[in-house]
Image (cartoon, rainbow, N blue to C red; front, top):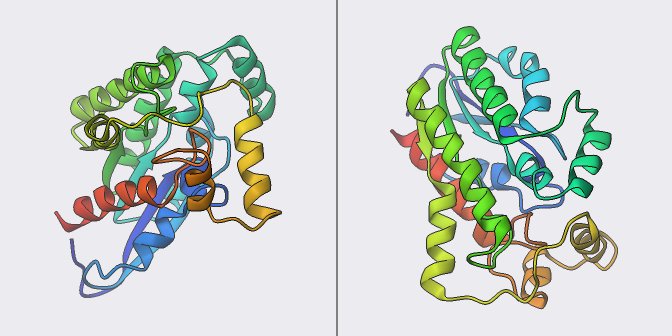
Amino acid sequence: MKNSVQPLRVVCVGDSLTRGQVSVDYVKMLASRDIGGSVRFTNAGVNGDLAFNVLQRLDSVIDLQPHAVSVLIGTNDTNASLSEKNIRMMTRMKKLPKRPTIEWYRENLAAIVDRLAKDTSARIALLSLPVLGEELGSEPVRRSADYSAVVKEIARTRKVTYLPLHERQLGYLTAGGFAPGLRFRDGRVLSAGAATQHFVLRRSFDSIARRRGLQLTTDLIHQNTRGATMIADLIEQFLAQ
């Protein structure tokens, strides 16, 4: 995807996985690549966002009049669905007007695509979700597959590009037969611990992942270099189409 007159404006929309403060920054990774022509990436990730929160702040994305938009959102929606504790935490943190459910996620994600299609001329790509947790067959992994199926459904019905991140990560874990060193837990204990190691002890995200026996993440949610590279690769392929 090339533009010889002006830089190609690409906006990456998402949550903390996109923001890249507590997760390896795949947007920065993309910006460092030779994608062809002049490309200007804008990071539109906000920590903790659910699909509802992204919908509320779309004006700032539309104002950029991007040529292409990638959307990776739903990990916090999925996480909230796993327990009442997580629902309370997300509702309080993000000031949600109602209980987060998969049906509400579907409504908000569809509305995001509809608004982008209506108010921009951008090509739109929806990424399925990274695996939540790394224990194959566990409820968090199954739940992230359920929410990813919603992403695929909306991409099909709205006729936008679908990028199979979940399938790629699940395939990697399945082929490797990896047993994670940690099991998924509710709340923020694992993510807070990873943040402390990174910002206080100055450990890299990849070092934290290795110490915890993890393949794609630092804390079963946020991405290490391997996980972030899978995201960047899919978006680069989309832009090259």
